[in-house]
Image (cartoon, rainbow, N blue to C red):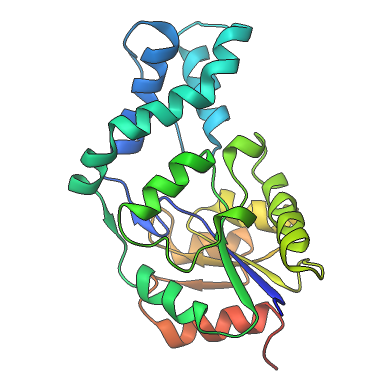
Length: 236
């Protein structure tokens, strides 16, 4: 019986990508346009479609229907090209694997991801660092599901409901992320939020954004598990 849904952000929460993500957007841009990117992609919690559309617009390009249709394939192709580079330059953040393993042992919890990455690229990013065990990608929310990050929470909840039965709302869903955009997505989308200051935003900034609980990182596994089970309604 699954009663709690945990949704992990990927970049700067579970992994550090070593700058490979921006290189992937640049390569996808070149695949779409036939010319190298002159500007760097702006990410900061946006979804892949938003990032790519913004990058095209910064180059003065209004995307054609053909480019829009090929966008996800270009992103997937670019990530596949950069997979080895990601493994060489990136790394799993401290505590990430231990946290996933510990939560997988809690009865009633299913874990997945909520990320601006398209699904194929999210799977690559966590799999490269051995974090995929314990994550059910079938019930995640991805940038390929929509441009608005907050909407991805409901997407994941509905998928979990269809697969496991029951219902998932704010009292049974926990989003874990590192930016105020992650926090806002959880608040707007219908999830409790745990902030982790493993990116560029501080504990104070994540608290001010409205996170229910904030940690400096993922290394205090007992405290993290306790927070998740409480927010997911599995402890009293």
